[in-house]
Image (cartoon, rainbow, N blue to C red; front, top):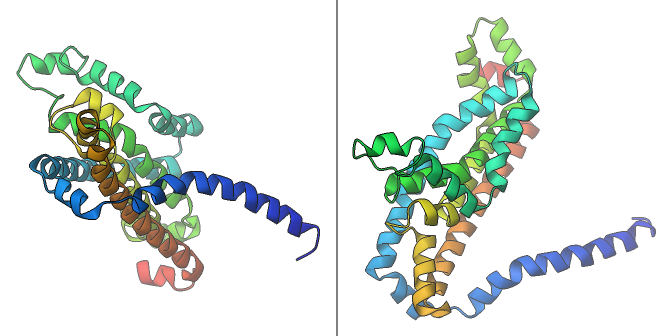
Length: 275
């Protein structure tokens, strides 16, 4: 390493270290002050268990829906001959930057009892808010873009020559997708699905507006904070942090699989295995 590069790396390390400290200090402080025995007892309360089951059920439903719908959309954006491709990709990104509370207002305007879609259904006694459906709608709005973007990136990273080779041998577009494109892109897509799941599990703002009841874990944490302050909210916060850490670990593992597949998946043997 040259002498001119070393000071630059030191400065960058100091600047990055300050940001890393800001990111990790609150989490480390939570773990340092954890009262494990009382917090575990708090999480055993019926309300906490019900909130956990609600979050687990709705986030699982949301993940299934966003995978079934989002992976094809990501493939279409990556491989379809679309006009204004960047415009459509930008629309996918848009819900990711809309504040959660604003997203909840938009969802309520659309699916609420007086909304564009909710009003006609309300006449048939079909409610899309303040129930599990409303929670899933909120989770889809904030989380589905993660699946679409990861699918788009995954399919874009697949070597088109492999797909062309299979098509030359007579495979249909569906066969090429099923046997080549999806298996090669899947580790990256799975990592995106994992992040989308934890984003859905931790969704608060939109859920608070669209479906306050039944409580999800984030809404339950807010209720405990309003009633008992920090001591009441900290156990739920710890649970959400642990779930997020597990999801990040899984996502990083799947990302490593993606890198490994790209490194060793030589064109010489991949077509023979997949075609």
